[in-house]
Amino acid sequence: MATKKIVFLDRDTIPASITIPTPNFAHQWVEYQSTSPEQVLERIYDADVVISNKVYLGSDILEQAKQVKHIAVAATGVNNVELDYCAQRGITVTNVQGYATQSVPEHVIALLFTLMRNIPAYHNDIRNGEWQRQNKFCFFTHPIQDIAHSTLGIIGSGALGQATAALARAIGMNVQFSERKGVTHCREGYVPFERFLKTSDAIALLCPLTEETTNLIDSEALSNMKSTAVLINTGRGGLVNEADLVCALKENHIAGAGVDVFTEEPAPQTNPLVENMDLPNLILTPHVAWGSRSSIEKLCEILVSNIEAVEQGKTQNRMV
Image (cartoon, rainbow, N blue to C red; front, side, top):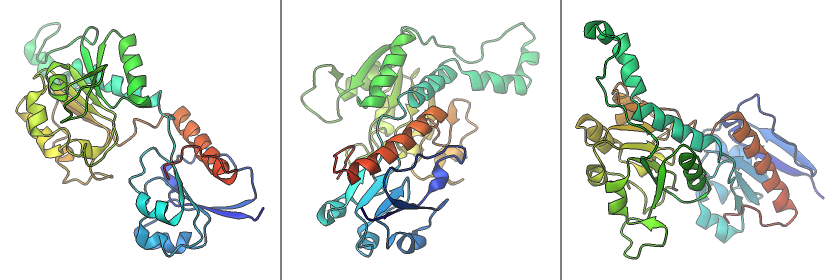
């Protein structure tokens, strides 16, 4: 078998402390910590396999990289690859699935506890001297909600949604899944979108970003949520209209929000959420919900397994 050239365009998306397994066939491994759009073509023009986490691979570049036969996406989302072109050209595209079914649900639940018990707000109260001004052993300037017996609404019923549901039930929550917005017939086991918004005490977004789900949570959706509800987005930034979310938080249309994903990453200082990150009912994390060490190690194992599977003619985790 001829030696295959494997190029990893953004190795820096994997911590340096994590060792990536070695593919079990003859290959040349080339990795770059990061790759700008201007550098993509020169780095992949003679590659057989291209690994990318977030670097965009469009038809304008791929049509000049004639040797590329396989794009191994080091993530679940494949919106950084022009799939239609790959299908036309016969380029195999694989992704990594099921690696963060422990890490992401734990992050969701951590945000739920933090928001529903208003932990950051009380922390800020102490920092600002409120305890001393109250002059009593404890004080209640922010509502504290129990997690148990509350209802977690989940949008996205895939592996992450199901794993989050299992963890939520384990701590005493009721769980409901949303039917797609605008669908007239509701599937068994799902709740119509409008009723879902009105009856959930917390909503977790764990669905893919598509044309149908872009800005799924906008001002209208937020106004239909309970004023005591919290929103958790560990899915994709574009699922939520960020400006609308800030307005809903400021106007107390909802009680809080935890956001791990943004429409642009890294989020610029002009991002509405970043500009308002001092709101006591808003928690931001930099797309790290997936990033426990065990999850990243599992991701790397599946990534290399996908590459080996394609070499062996197997159809493992193929998107194209």
